[in-house]
Image 1 (cartoon, rainbow, N blue to C red):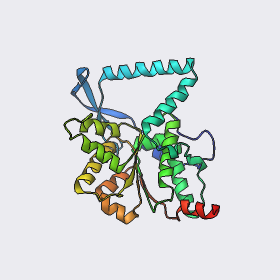
Image 2 (cartoon, rainbow, N blue to C red):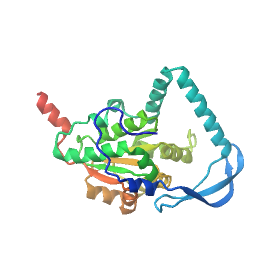
Image 3 (cartoon, one colour):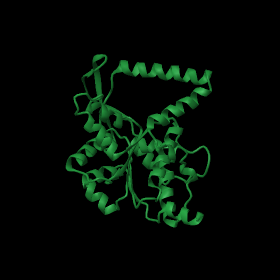
Image 4 (cartoon, rainbow, N blue to C red):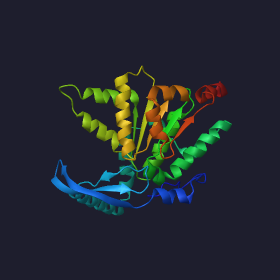
Length: 287
């Protein structure tokens, strides 16, 4: 899948070809064993290990589930050929499933205006991130956006998600409090989903955005819950974007060095949105 932009400006990737070749080494089987599929029962699985040390090993999934997935994809491709409108309907379904706030449905990385010099640095990193998202997926490369309210952090994060979905990838947006509430609700007797199902829902998308980190008074339990979810994605090489109104030092103190280290592994970055409130400036211009 090609995640490079089809229209608009594109910054040249700063990633060298040697980095790509190093990351995309072939996998090898290092162990075999019997695993259990909830739907199809026992199956023979292989433990795959990558020659690059940053890529964690993983067990192959149920072959019958893989066949079902391949059949569904073949049927989907046939529908797309017969009905051009199907692609648009699927795009709407992906957007709805991603739970992107309506305000950011049209957010576009390639149309982001760089009002201040510091924005050019962030824009260059973000555009490179989108244009080389296949490599981002291979490395599980995440981002952390820090800075005061009104500096465009959520807008840019959702713009990245929109780009990923425009290339038929999947994304999910959630605030930290909504994620924690959803986990907490699984402890109720009448819960509609299990804690495992919540974690799986947040682990499965290609890209996850967690907004408003640190907005509420975080407890040790809430931080541990957040760590568990992010660690699951880290081990699965699934990129995550965290958004917070805290500065960089406050963010490290809140999340802990271990969690921040997971974002820096594989080339992840913490970007500071250190410029004035864009919403305030817009009001001053219009007044």
